[in-house]
Length: 74
Image (cartoon, rainbow, N blue to C red):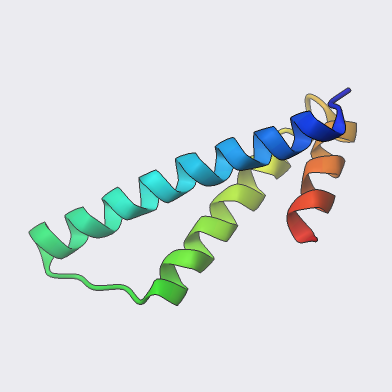
């Protein structure tokens, strides 16, 4: 079972990792392929990545996955 502080900590880490990942991907796309995405598009990609990660935890720990998703959707 994950406590309230752990839920926020885990979401914070997921957000941090996702922000780093999508910032780097956007940088590389702009530099190497001349592809430019809007900030709204990058935000949607980040949101989808975090939701997918939370859903992937459902099979191993459904209660924690549910709490994470509830907190993310607030």
